[in-house]
Length: 64
Image (cartoon, rainbow, N blue to C red):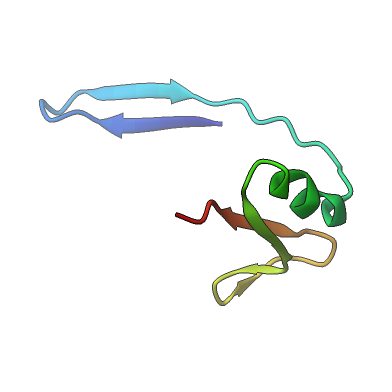
């Protein structure tokens, strides 16, 4: 992915990102994260925005 961001002086800055996608069994992730003190849940959306069929979210936090 390439993005172009305007600098304060009107010039442009280019940035490149590379993302690798991997397939995993998401049902196993909450237990793996729990071993490190993270409470995680598998879901189908970020807020009210549902993902396409077959995609999942993993949302977690480390209790204080």
